Image (cartoon, rainbow, N blue to C red; front, side, top):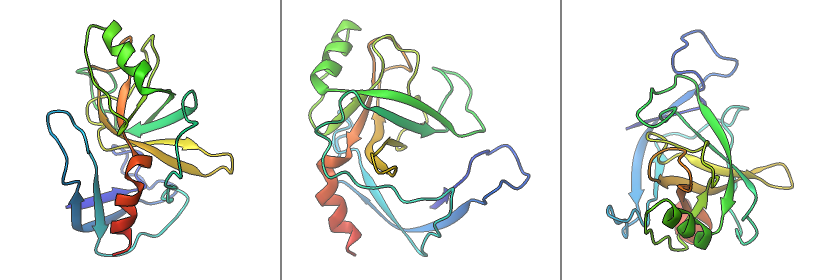
Length: 190
């Protein structure tokens, strides 16, 4: 498996300001409790054969200490997923800003849309009740970050699932990174 970091435009062969980096993956650690029916524990870590060189287009992201006060904050979701449901895949990295909503409100929103979803605290939701903006098919595994007061970015979630794309009362559901911080730290030590 190969991971590319720092890419921006997949369709443009001319050099970008900062070049991407490819790294061979040595180890993939998936969470042992992952449930493919509910997507609970939808998280994996990768270790590369060689280190990553930090540059302006490849930067580390902070792990959250807590996410108690994130509801209402603006999160940023990025990826090369579909531009809209059943739509084309973009060549340029996309980003969208979404408000973080609490899990009870997230469940209520889905209920208004005609779905009965249980969203435990291992997930974090982001989206607009009116729809219009969302991650989409192909974005799964991508980051949901927030900008901290110190200017650095914090990984609040990893895109996990949703129903449709950008539909009314159907926010995106991400794996809540603060819940898995200890699990992540355990593997970072090796």
